[in-house]
Length: 172
Length: 184
Image: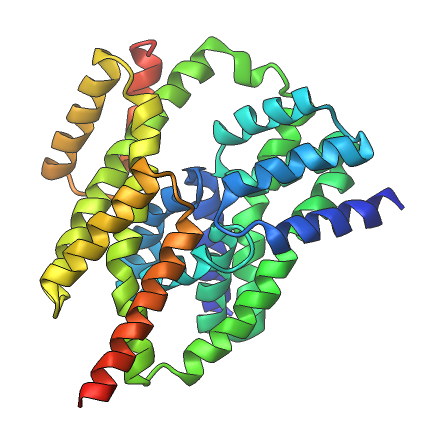
């Protein structure tokens, strides 16, 4: 029974949280009030841990909240509940995209959104920079990685992990 | 079958090395999906993000579903989405059960701070590359720059929701289309 409820509640979150992982946070606070599956304090912890573990924040929080409520299977059910609306809706939209792939007006519309998307990526960058570049040392590591990127071209994962190793070595 | 396996590996890797929200996965997707496997073009990836931003659900999942569907229809969509969430499922379950003190370990905290600096660096590079590309392909440079700065102002300083910003730009473009049609 708890699994059905978990699936249902996270399905709703997946359906109504428009705009990314962080938008799921208020829904989790609502859940803590409605079912007492977890306390608001625990939600705060979930947010902190979800932000500092690999994986998109929204998914991490669903797994964590589900696990907290009903163990491993709870984590799996909550996660699937969360992704199910995306899966259905995006498959439908994909069909539309395919049907209109050669439509000039449709492509014009999509292309006109690109400058705004660049602004959104920059916004995400600023948010991460604000919390991570809070003193001289992280800033120096940041500059080093940027210069390193110019001279040694490889995948992003390498630079991210390199920064992690430097952070560990310098006790950042 | 080979495509499905590659799709799985690509999105598993993306889930594993994404630290932060949906946009933090853009650099990895660009490496893997666009450059390495040619699953989608850079334009398509940007479209997935802009549509994924204003449709329900986690952006990361939306983008994975788009890529998977493009390659292998519904099966591809399911495989890509499963692969994306699998690392989270495993890691969070471990952290929540046996590794509950793992996140408080000093070494882990230092490494995580470093990783976030790395993500910021990789993202700045992506913004620069994307900006350059959008400018180079633009037929309306002045207007596109305006859209960029207004959108930036709206999300960074006015804290307006990204969903609203994308929807507003879409409405504006629909208006432009109608206006051009009428004047033709």
